Length: 123
Image (cartoon, helix red, strand yellow):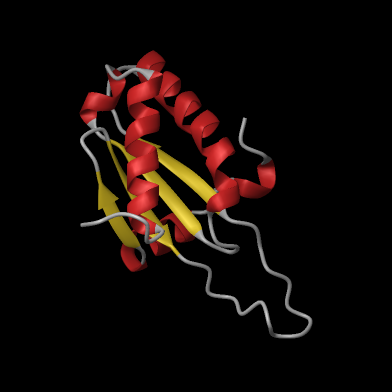
């Protein structure tokens, strides 16, 4: 499970990540990344940890399918949150095909999207 300090909960944070962040689309999901806006060199200002949130709409499937997809994405993000810059906001939006996808397929798409957003992938 994703630790509490790494969870994105407020509507404003979701909106900031989606509207002002960069986006990488894959066949099963879309990842929005808003890099940290705090300067770690300012004295007295603590750097917040990176936080992630998930959007799984009814287009993905029924309640059981949506909750399964959310649990899989949270588990995948738990292992990848350390590679995100401090203070960043990540929103992972599942597309309709994510309901039928395996854990490995979701992991592959999430890794590819994060690699592209963090500067390691070609466009």
